[in-house]
Length: 367
Image (cartoon, rainbow, N blue to C red; front, side):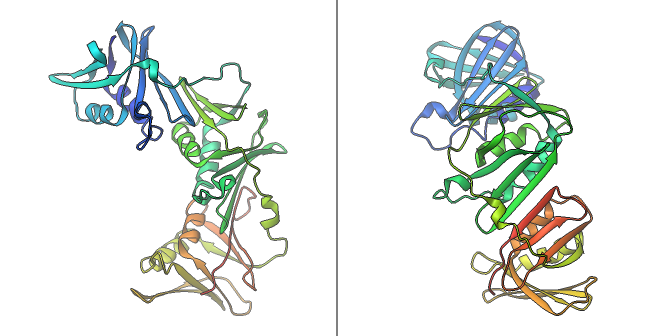
């Protein structure tokens, strides 16, 4: 097995696998990526048995073949070289050489036969969705995914169709984020309420982070497959029932104020300077034409800030986790945002003004 490949292309291909390969595993082969050369291309395959990535790149193949090598070490080696072209050659006993200019690395590999099979689901029905739509929806929900392994159904985003739109939902029990975008005439098949795990969502986000073209999405047999150009990402879905998030959305109108996004973000970040794992609260007080933010941490100190707003109602105050507010506001692109607060420690809602495309519901704290 031997091939020559453009260094930047090979580095990018290997780097895409680093979020998938297992750091700690009882199967050493899962630390590796499968490299398969043939037909003037090289295919790089990675899997942790739950997520699989198959990506093809142009290469000058001299001798076809396949081998698995450690993904992270291979990436480090390529990263530290400087010439334009890399020569990759398989030796006896499953060793390989990586040559770039005068630099030569030797790396032990494992036989390709030991690597788990990664299906490309070629017979699956696929639908098209724009990269920027998927990217925006993931950014507006990813932060709210639960990391509590005891609540399996919350360890991913809930993805479904809804009357010509696609909806993503994520919650950790303290906050609920909903993103909704129209499909603009495109038909998405079989997306009838699936849960994509956190790690899989992160890999999909990497796949759609550049460009505005479409990706193809297919759902079936407990997996979600996303295709973009010559890259195929296969993600096993969470087999659980997602809770009815509609019950959390407040029906009654609360006290609503409009805020300049940058102004409130800077103020909240000033409050977060003195927050810690034990004390992460910020108290927001509404008075006539002003919002007062205060934060107290017995281990560090106190902070106070004031923002001019348009408000003429009664004095009102509520406490929140400052990080939750920052996360929810930071993903909004508009200059103005809406914050809706409720008495009796009811849920508060952050929205985009004049749009139904995003809302984040946050439960307040008792400070």
